[in-house]
Image 1 (tube, rainbow, N blue to C red):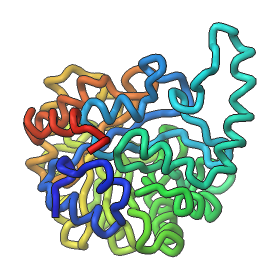
Image 2 (tube, rainbow, N blue to C red):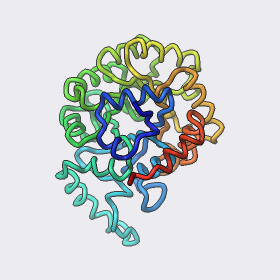
Image 3 (cartoon, helix red, strand yellow):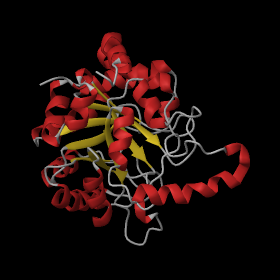
Length: 315
């Protein structure tokens, strides 16, 4: 089994869930995930945030604020739109989103452009929460995630959504029943999301038992009280339950200096993380690109980082 940073474009495009889990496990804590917001103009004009994250060393890319009822990714779907026309240019967006909605190969196209594993946030918000229906964890969106070719979903909560450990647990069960062995399920909280952080290892263990393939926790140093020893205890509980563990930088510290990112990365690796995530709160919906590269360099060195960054998609 190849390690994730050794995979070529064709292998990434064809890989199924079971093999994705095994290649992450074979990578021994050297898998990098970048989360990006896609419903705003990207950091670099003409280059989507998913493309930029891929260029700076991410193996897995999670789309945040992706709406299954209004699929549109700035930097990819706005090609040819003249924003010098001002607000008038934005009138084209609904038309393009409708075309994407009718295209079952849409996400496969995005994956082909980036050459990376592609995932999406689905949020198990409480009943009565006024939240865009296309971003909520529900049966319709889960079926679309499966049909459109996402490699994984992330069951978590953005700030102030009110997502709880209970709604996450229910979301895992609902997702597992629909996605089965086709789409990898990642679940957990990287911050309070308008409620409480999760500190109890037994809660995390219950996520794995319910069907999460990967359990998400905050990286040491990102939320109050989360140090390396607590992270290690949580990850041990997750591993004992048979799941992989992901540590997340999701508290806007993805916009910190590179030495801070290095500390998060090394503490997470010492705690036993299988995947290391860096969030989208740098500028314009993406971490500072050099911080994505710093995270990669800290956990797998320049050799593997440069390989991931430079490997041609045409091979």
